[in-house]
Image 1 (tube, rainbow, N blue to C red):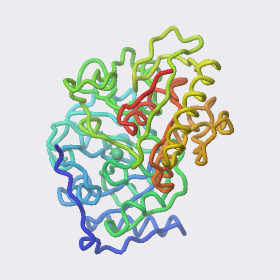
Image 2 (image 1 turned 180 degrees about the vertical axis):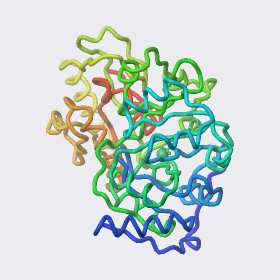
Image 3 (image 1 turned 180 degrees about the horizontal axis):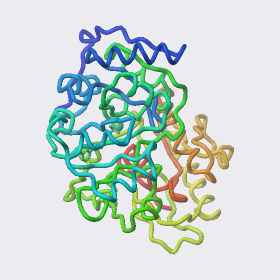
Length: 383
Ligand code: AMP
Ligand code: MG
């Protein structure tokens, strides 16, 4: 049960400006909006963020309303200078400093105990705060120009795929926020890795572009929140947001997966990062393609509209009218960059059923599958 708020048409009073011209002038105008407690969406290297003054309870409340986000799901605070962490957190352990030095600016969010200046409205009532220094130049200049810390969740309506293009933000936020800064397509395409640093051993609360082994190279042992490994209703994810359904297209999405990997030796667990660069075998890919073609035929023959989510390597192997290509199987980062865009395209095509290959190869596979499994409501067929 969530306290998600439905925004009615009559509340759509704001004239959202889409700014794609002179970045310097646009950032100045956007900073003024933030200073007067308004909301601005802006590009980061992960996904587009929906920004408001992180230290202002009312701005945070506006973010929740615009997104229709449950108020127990805290916001990430974006900073433009490492030293700002000390303004927001009561304690900054050595492992935090090491990770900040290694990965900031970049797609890593750290959880630390919060100072009282960070309002409960920003942290969903938690006594910790999530902090990140993004690397996108527009994000950094907006934070600096505003002179604020910017609370910024992904700029989508709660539950929809995160926006990777300004047009996605417009689809979800038109009329609800003052401005969108258009910085083109984002680079990474999935949200930041979140690491809890409030205990002795860092814990990954959300997998992302910065993988477990990248973190371990810097700080030694790192664990993964057990609630992320298997969907178990008795386990509560430590990042409140991870318990919600996400990214789901309107059509019913099913993933077709094989767990046969070459040079793997490691058991695959759903949505979990594997610790090496294993690759799905050719034979398993053939089996996946065959199964998806069977499923497509079955639904098409029953009169339904169907789409297939695949990669460039396999795109011409399906007998389906709607083929959505999410990057190349050989380069996980290209799949991450396209994933949310193809999930949104499923809605544009208004298909009833969607079948997707599983993308669990390589180190990024865990982060990609974490999102795809949520989008599919964990509906998986193994071949
Ligand atoms: P988004 O802003 O859409 O990228 O989502 C932010 C994610 O960070 C959500 O899953 C939140 O639950 C999580 N998060 C934010 N602050 C905290 C915190 N203090 N402790 C644990 N998770 C957090
Ligand atoms: Mg989000």
